Length: 213
Image (tube, rainbow, N blue to C red; front, side, top):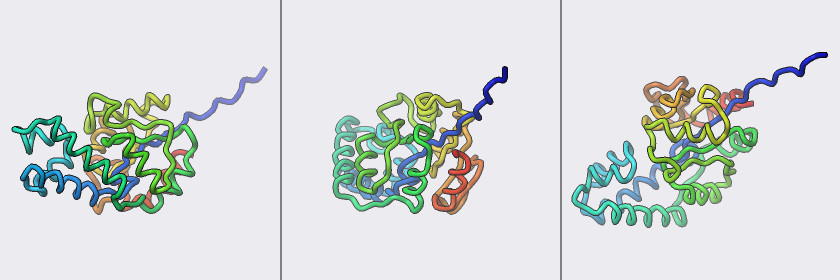
């Protein structure tokens, strides 16, 4: 009696969203700029902090004397309006890539909220996967490994079988601390620690598909 051949272990791809699949940098800058104006703060300084931290941590740094709940409510209002009326687009290659990936083998890991991701994906025509780990899904955000580990758990994947696609240092650190392979995209120079670097998502598409399929 012969045994059935062993199937190869699956490979999984986990994507950051803003800056990786969706070109939302200018939108984020405008949202934080409007928020800063409401509180009489320097928009450049606020945005510099916001790039490195989650909103509540940003408020504690740039507006420690303000009610953080009110700050967050104001930010959410501006971000929701941006989803409805902002101008943004998917990076070149994103539609082709996500449409070609095997179902159940990829997910999204974002510091944003699910309803905004779904709104942007609907407007840009990108498919939404079954697994989407957002800011509300975990107690610790990037650069903690928790978001990427949670996504792997939901996919039934081991960290060693996951490829993380990121554009920012905090996300790269999150993926590395989770024990995953991390590739950087959409940056002129490589973020410290990435295993491979691509100047654009478009350049990375064939390599990501080769990893996953």
